[in-house]
Amino acid sequence: MAKRDGENTIGDVLKNFIEKNKLQKGLDKVSVKEAWHTVLGDAIAKYTTDVTLDRTTLYVQLSSSVLREELSYGKEKIIRLLNEELGKELIKKLILR
Image 1 (cartoon, one colour):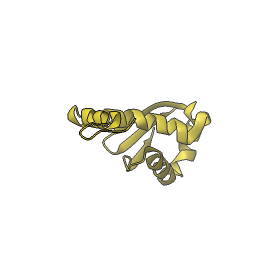
Image 2 (tube, rainbow, N blue to C red; image 1 turned 90 degrees about the vertical axis):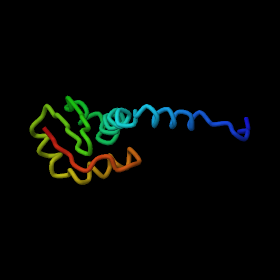
Image 3 (cartoon, one colour; image 1 turned 45 degrees about the vertical axis):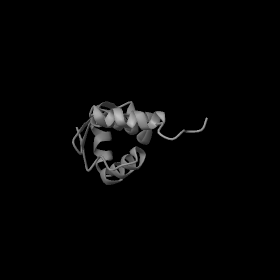
Image 4 (cartoon, rainbow, N blue to C red; image 1 turned 180 degrees about the vertical axis):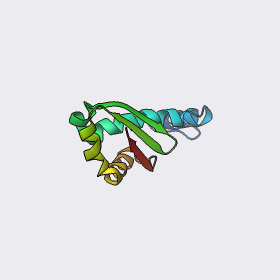
């Protein structure tokens, strides 16, 4: 169906709604959790107990100290991969707990 002059697409309406109601931060927090599981896979997700985004810092709670140590060596790469998955630079710092 063709778009008529003056009509908005559903995507435009949703973007306006999100901006008007300041929902983007909440959506970003959900997106980061999904991106963590997508980028790092099921094996690491199994040991992940919590993923929280606070401003530009991502806090990840892991149940395995060995895995936490291994992931700490590749923090920069993990941040880059997550930001690529999200399509924008949301994460600047990663803290593994």
